Amino acid sequence: MLAPWIAPSILSADFARLGAEVDAVVEAGADLIHFDVMDNHYVPNLTVGPVVCAALHRRGLTVPIDVHLMVSPVDRIVPEFAAAGATYISFHPEATQHIDRTIALIRDHGCRPGLVFNPATPLDYLDYTLEFLDLVLIMSVNPGFGGQRFIPTTLRKLAAARTRIDAAGREVRLEVDGGIKTDNIRAAARAGADTFVAGSAIFGSQDYARTVREMRAQIA
Ligand code: DX5
Ligand code: ZN
Image (cartoon, rainbow, N blue to C red; front, side, top):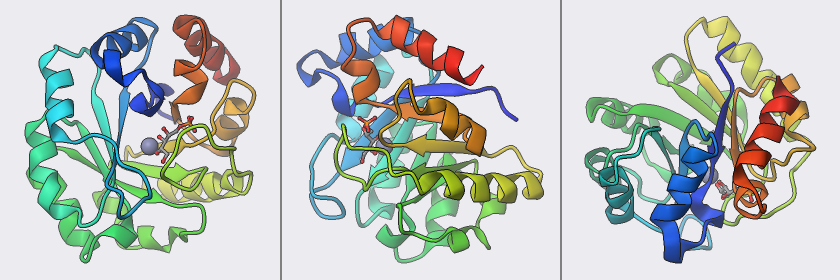
């Protein structure tokens, strides 16, 4: 198992003070910054793009940026996020025409590809892709909004993804995204997740460092 990573989602940050908010969660012990990109087309919400990613990158972030693309089409925007300092770039298989091509495009631009599974999307998409991925992201809410309730069937999906990743014998992160709090992070870890996105649970708390610490204690 890889060392567990906590990935605060900027979706729940105060966007008027985004740089300071990101600095604060890094200071609080974040391992990764989860950057949610929504286009009001693939998902019914609109957030931020490569310009904002580049601005955070230029700030001199000491942790990698984990770009979660909830956009369609995908390919056009990949080079822009690579140039903007993304380390991981993940996308939804339903959002692109040619999944294998999009994975290769992300890799060719020097980033680590991830594939994202909505709650009702089968893991079959991993059959011919897992060997090319560095990250599998299991959505535990329907994509589009922060602050939603964790969908419990995600746990058996995480377990199934864990089995596949272990069988593949490659270093692939298993990330869970949506409704993760201090009181359910342990269940997600037990099911096999090693990378934990948390938006409202961290940015909605009074003390970011304490929340990150409590999450780590739960999964230790
Ligand atoms: C939802 C996003 C999540 C979201 C999670 O579409 O992908 O990353 O920010 O927020 P919480 O942790 O509040 O569910
Ligand atoms: Zn996300």
